[in-house]
Image (cartoon, rainbow, N blue to C red; front, side, top):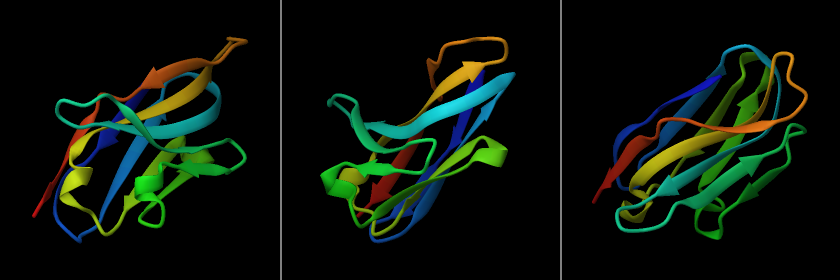
Length: 119
């Protein structure tokens, strides 16, 4: 099971959408989420989404970021609007995955992608 994520560079006030695809022999995916780590800081939760579509956001991104998922494509997205320089960080995607012929869920992480918001 692998997670692949794509990010980019954007100016302050701009928008960017992150995508994360879960690939491999998968039976099901439960919660999915996005985390970020800024230089010199600990990794923090940005947003999560359950298998049923319930969402949760860090206070600093509420109203600006939207998490969503496409279960048919095993993909989650993070639409980021009104970006600020303080949103600059390495963004990681996470998914709780039950692999084929496995009866439990495991945490998987993407490789991280740098999002730079220039002022």
